[in-house]
Length: 151
Length: 151
Image (cartoon, rainbow over all chains, first blue to last red; front, side, top):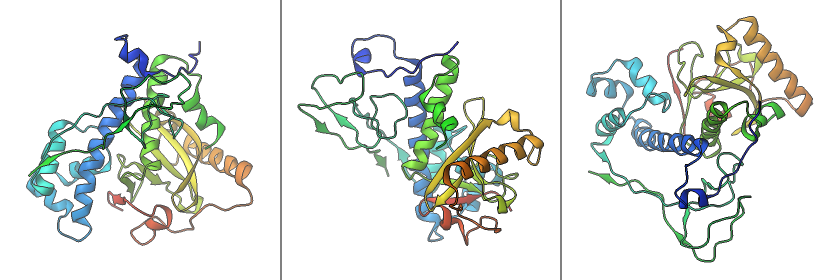
């Protein structure tokens, strides 16, 4: 048995209908990836000029170096706890968040739900997009993707 | 990417769980495309959680992207046609590949090389006999990449 690919529009979410499983899987994976990217880039900014090392993280967090390697390698097994501990050790900060309302646009990578444009997140109060993913909003407001860091 | 890899993202899929899994793989690919931090294993046997790795026999000039979560793990093999350009040529479930050096791994590498020749001959992939290291990592990926694990 095969399942044909289905491109879902935001209209399903707007109508309060069950959100497709693949859409849920996609946004969850994106969230995890963004969290990892944010923390790791903060570390790399300090590691490059030798201001912070992996050994420093190991010592500060009382973790085996192998665990630090696992965390640095990718977002698998990350939790809010591990991310918060790493960020605290890296630049003495903690995570804060903004939510990002999203609208449909052409998916530039051709992957994931048809409505998601990972390179150009926009907010719109205008009509919902067509199923094929092309979207020409009449009114849009750009919302910058950002994470607030409280120091 | 090759047709077989592309089908992971375009379907059809055998069931919803596999579709969800492939959607998460697409997020892993987005990381590379988007210039997100990329961890590279110094040694494929010692940094199993790295995002990607040069396969053990460096003269094969073949790499894999490791999509480890959620289960089942997926390995996508490919080669660099130039800096920052990874051509995904073959994939398999991690559980099918057994240990490094196994007949299954050798067959996967052969498939990868065969597809390279079929699609890109006479062009040669980036690389030589040298294992990836700090000295040559940026021959493959220019920015936002770092090595993990021991040699």
